[in-house]
Each structure stands twice: as C-alpha cells, then as structure tokens.
Image (spheres, rainbow, N blue to C red):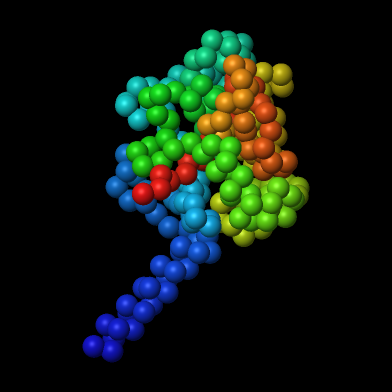
Length: 221
C-alpha cells in the first residue's frame, strides 16, 4: 500500500514538472509517430522542426532541388507550396535541421501541421516571448539549443531547442546555418509578406517565398 502511494506521488510530481518547467515529453500515436513536445507556460510546442513531405490530407508538397534557385523563386511568386533542405549538404540538413518551407506551404488549406496541431500565429509567438522575458537577447538564448550555435551560444533553458538551420532567400539563396534560425508564423501582412520569428531578433516581416523552419503549437482543448 505504501509503495503504491509513493509511486503515485512521484508520478504526480513528474507531471507537475513537465507542465510547468518546459521539460520535453512525447505525443504518441500521430501520423508522424512520436512528436517531441515541450510545455512552455500555457503553450505546448514541438521541440523539433517540422519534417513532413505531405499535407494533412495526403497530398504531396513540392520538393524543389537545393540547386534550383530559379525554381524556388518561381514557386514563391506563383504561390506554389514548396520545401527544401538547406544547401547542398543534404545529409546534415536532413538529419539535424529538417526542412525549410515557403509561406505558401504554411498557409495551404490542406494543412501543413499534423492533426491536433497548428502553425502559430503572431500573437502566439509573442506569448512565448513574453513568458520567457520579452523580446531580448536573454529570451532568444533561452529558446536556442545549447548545441550547434557558433555565436552567441544558447542555454536552451526553455526546452524549445531551436537549432541554427539557416534560411533560403530569393536574394542570397542559402544563408545563416550555424548562426540563424527563422520560423514561420501563420500571420499574413499583405499579398507579398508574412510574419517570421527570428531567434536572433524576434518577429519581422518577410517575403512569402522565403524558406524558413516550421514549429507547430498544440491545439488547446
């Protein structure tokens, strides 16, 4: 009897830790398998970058070759959803940083996020920042993984584990690996731009054809 009570107390304590201090856990039984997630404040975030090649309805998302700069730019201008890996070092990008998506993939009504999740909007990114102390370098370092960043280093105090996966732009093609990470929001500014969240700098207005990482946030019940 005492052993049962002790076990129950330990389990309750662990649940409390997971709920309040950003420790990672797993969401089981989804189409993607186990999705690493982390509780930060009143939100539950994926603790890894999204890595899908199909929309929620099963339709494939167009993969544009990492060497095809013109095709990437054309897809962006025509509003075609697309993904790629960072640069030509595909093996490292595939394993470590996962995929980069343009905003048209993020906004597609077929659904980029898996069931039970969605792409965070501008307000949800702001809530995350505010919970960690506001839009400043201390907050950004809390969001960064403690591995992979060349400078400045991250502490990953939040458990968000942002990796410096770089971006794909229409101007410089690939840039920022080791130094930068940008995540899409679902918030549109106008016909050309949408809000992206820069780990080094907070929210900014970005061209929709840019290739950024994606993190999803869990739907609230």
